[in-house]
Length: 308
Image 1 (cartoon, rainbow, N blue to C red):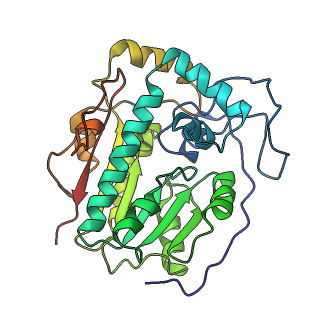
Image 2 (cartoon, rainbow, N blue to C red):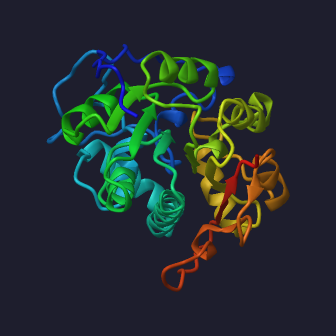
């Protein structure tokens, strides 16, 4: 299925809020990274020019994650913030890469099972190998839609992807699933009559219980056809207590406050899906291609299939 047209939208102006009611808003700009806001930064030699909705004096969660993965779409302001994160949680780079590898294994499996549509929620900046590269290696006709709330991420994606109609990037806040689903239907980006792989990897640990992360998942799952897959991961409560304390020492009270959940709580995020073996496990243990490294912080996840 192809959309009727590829409409490019101008990024919306970014909004700021210090309200605790908005905790998680900026954190949801990019998945996998808990270091989006780590204090003031003074080094600016390679920061880009100012533009609407972009503050070059402030680190971006998406670019910090890009740096952790070894990418080059980041600036000094982001690298300094990431280095402060690594100073207290030194295995964060390794954990980011382990989680990324889990995501790619999950979407590859789903595509090998015949699913030709991927909805990647909270995507961040494209980093090779990207989701669409892995999917298209299996099925070049598969459709991928990247969704992120950061207007700069969409601008980067539009410039960097330079892809045909099979890959699209849109702005959207995962806390408002109905708005995203309506947009996908209106612009014919996803055919909900056919199975979809939904990716919610390392993003829901930025959503407090008060905002009902399980309800967010359920509202995305509702329109999905039987046979759809859910690839999901989040920080796990069985992480090393000292590492959790170190992370909380810099993240608590900020927009990147992180919520660690037990394996049972993570399993409940898969309500309405049948978990594929081995179920919810640490991401490095989910059908690994090689031995997984040990880290003090843990991210657990799995892949679920929506039954008929």
